[in-house]
Amino acid sequence: MLLFSAYLLLSLALFAVALATLWWMLHAWRTPDVLAATSFPAGSDRPELSFSLIVPARHEQAVLGVTLQQLAHLDHPDYEVVVVTGHDDPATAAVADAAARRWPQRIRSVTDHSWPKNKPKALNRALSHCRGQIVGVFDAEDEVHHRLLRQVDRTFRASGAHVVQGGVQLMNYRSSWYALRNCLEYFFWFRSRLHLHAQHQFIPLGGNTVFVRADVLRAVGGWDDACLAEDCELGVRLSALGARVAVAYDPHLVTREETPDSLRGLLTQRTRWNQGFLQVLRKGEWRRLPTTSQRWLARYTLAMPFLQAFTGLVIPVSIATMVSVKVPVGLALVSFLPAIPTLGTLAFEIAGLREFGRVYYSRPRLRDYLRLAVGLFPYQVLLASAAVRAVGRELTGQRGWEKTAHVGAHRGPVPTGAVAEPAA
Image 1 (cartoon, rainbow, N blue to C red):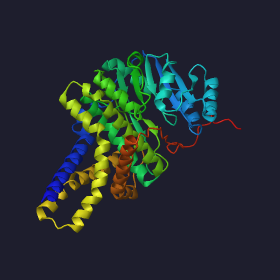
Image 2 (cartoon, helix red, strand yellow):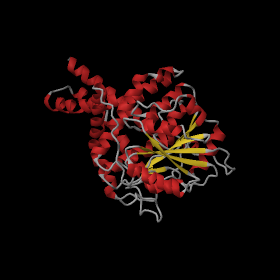
Image 3 (cartoon, rainbow, N blue to C red):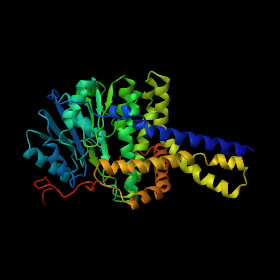
Image 4 (cartoon, rainbow, N blue to C red):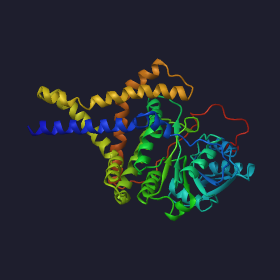
């Protein structure tokens, strides 16, 4: 009887988690007004702010040159690009130095001598060289829309925000079965979920296309260089301090990126993110949020690795129990409750894939929809595995930075004249 009661409670808990996840995923589409409010403010006034764009790059010589060429030609009158490379990474530094020589009025190359290396240390190193009123962050493989800074400039002035979070979108959804699901995750997260967080004034910021007023960023000491999710940590810390965060999304202005090029790469990337969330949860800045609803949202969001890990461990136990243990019919029916919002999520993912194809001019094929459906359970197993691994690494004190490799799978042919790695 005790086992049956525990099974019932577990099924109800998983049902509640799946239902909440589905509701938050669809936040932006609740009404036409909510969807319209997620966009950048309209207008075409003259830009007034100055920007410093930080590009941390480590072992990125294959993709950095094209990114810097694009960043050197953005449509904004007052910005600089500060690219920061490690002292032990001469190949990437050579690409950065070549770009700085080619576009000295736009690009500066900075060397990070810290050890061990990680992204927040590089960001803090670059911050001391930033001259702009607004500090933005981009990754080494990013494709940035040439008019993005104008829209961000207008958003800061129209909203009075301390932080503006733009959209990021993975593009190469046909590269692999998991790439399709990875791309849709980003689509729903930046198109919808982050707007819900901004509405509740608690937001774990995205890793790039995030812009912060330089005086605010320096006042809080920059990024936490011991955290594996420095973007999330900064967002939580600023939320707790009452910073105003504006999230704006336009599918044509998103920063385009690629999915990890292997399952191992995706696993280590998600492990790092999950472990970083656990570090932010333990750090406890979220406890300073002013309202109970904000603190509960923070607990749920930051504890998601625990929930995923728990789900990953429980699913095989539940299946074994259903097969090997005779349970009452009512209990068996309750055990299927989590499947209802899960199937609902799949239905909305199918609709989301169609919308993704419409706005990015890439019509999905039948096999794309089939891969989406077939990959549902394997992808959840992968995410649960990453969560379990993150918990294990955190408990054993393994906090080294596991870097994600980039190969430029989201790009077409390399533009003529791009700065590439110098020949040996």
